[in-house]
Length: 151
Image 1 (tube, rainbow, N blue to C red):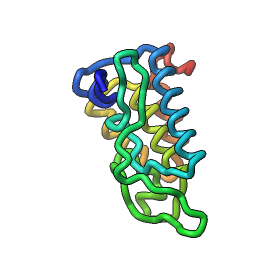
Image 2: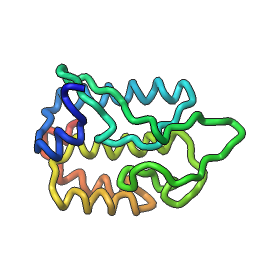
Image 3: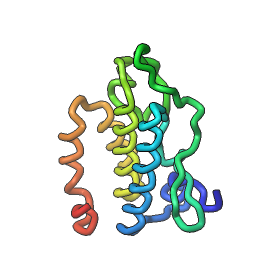
Image 4: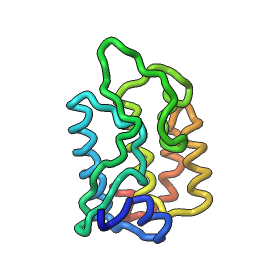
């Protein structure tokens, strides 16, 4: 797509989304993932690099290389996807379902809401290693600007 990926915009071009654009991207990803989950498809590698932007900043979910149809009878435990965006249950080889994508969506939101820094990567890694991500999220909320905290 002509706009490239969300990852490239945020990290390679050192771009920055204003709040209305963050909401537009987040809503687009949410709608795309909702469609996939309604059709029993688990993406399993949702991350900023797999979100493409067109010239109007409309986002499309991409790269279905490790996506799977969720079966009622089979339990998924395979460790797949990109480590920094994986849900704890995926990292720990525990059974998981579409909720692992929702965790990854949370990491994407974190990417959208925070500016890139080398510290940001360390914080994200620590976040994923925690059993209770809510404690880490609340600790990092103070780092967000007042404008973004209202989101």
